[in-house]
Picture 1 (cartoon, rainbow, N blue to C red):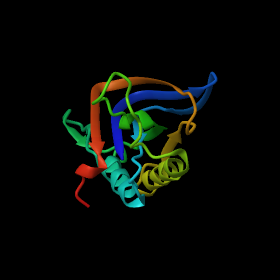
Picture 2: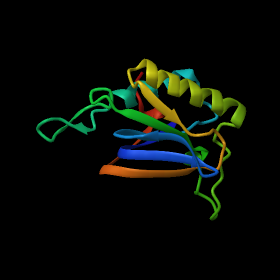
Picture 3: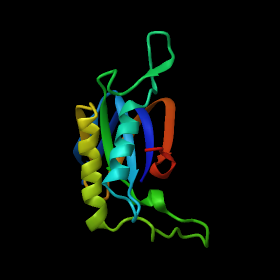
Picture 4: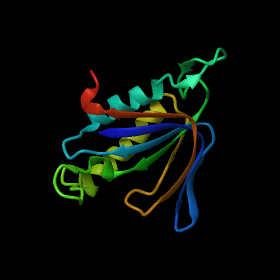
Length: 151
């Protein structure tokens, strides 16, 4: 799995001009599922993200997690994170998991975020054409690949 995590003051996702998920202070997570991913990768990534200390403490140091600040998460499925641009000009998405595998792992990841203490987890609509708005706070943007995690 790959995740692009952005610390936000606000984030919102719309489908057909209808708000499907919206958060105040917290994390916007763009989540890509690889064809070889399992619940093991999803659980490890959710644990890592919920504990990331990327929010400022009283001294202005990034020392607090989304859970420490009582923040929320907006998780958006994003197969394009597995776009392979090594040949030609049109990315290949062959390594991204197909819908029937990716959606259950996306849902599992969101549930694991909740189990790890992120109480308000909002979601987009899996596979839909979504419009995501955000106010990046910092900006703080972190990219994590579950292959790089030690679990």
